[in-house]
Image (cartoon, rainbow, N blue to C red; front, side, top):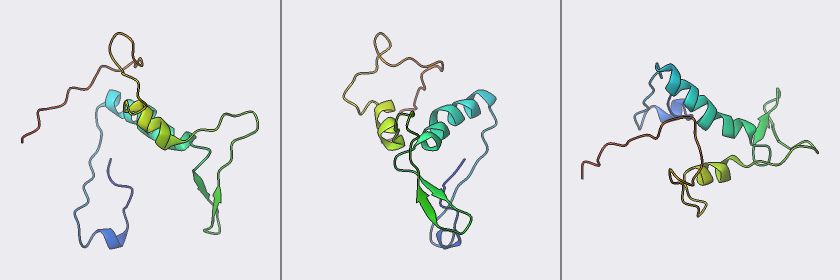
Length: 103
């Protein structure tokens, strides 16, 4: 896992860090919770064509439009709703415990 900016211009004035996700459960969580949203975006996404040009994605008539950035904000609790153990969004994964901030 790492930056999506793997371009030569980015390797000379900053440090790019990449790492493998070896835990199968965590890898599945990254795929289902992080990668699935941008791939399902059919309103703001762009499709790269064989000639190098981009075309805007468009939802099929029977498909609901999805914007990945709005879904990420909602997932992070930025939608104004409290996501608590008793009444919040349900996940099949256990909650992540973050380490204390060093400062």
